[in-house]
Image (cartoon, rainbow, N blue to C red):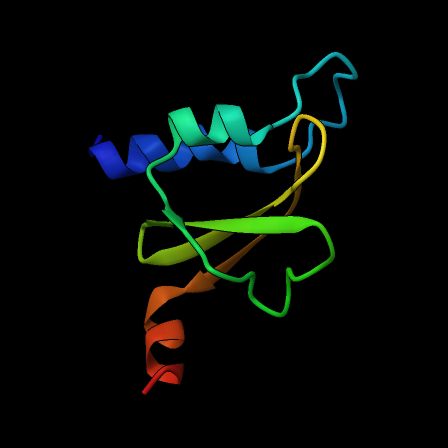
Length: 93
């Protein structure tokens, strides 16, 4: 298995809320920052924009994954969205 596939599989439980286990740990920015290679975004994309939040982006398996975190408290993840990297790159031309 390739390293990127393993990283992608590792991101799945982190990016999705865990409904089955109420004791599951919330994805905070502290956990995300240590575990996921990413870049800081100056502003969140319109689909994730909101008051008092910031976004980070990771690229994996030819997709751009953007994570939005609350600026307050433990900085929990409040939203997540993925885009095909080729489509996103074409829209920038």
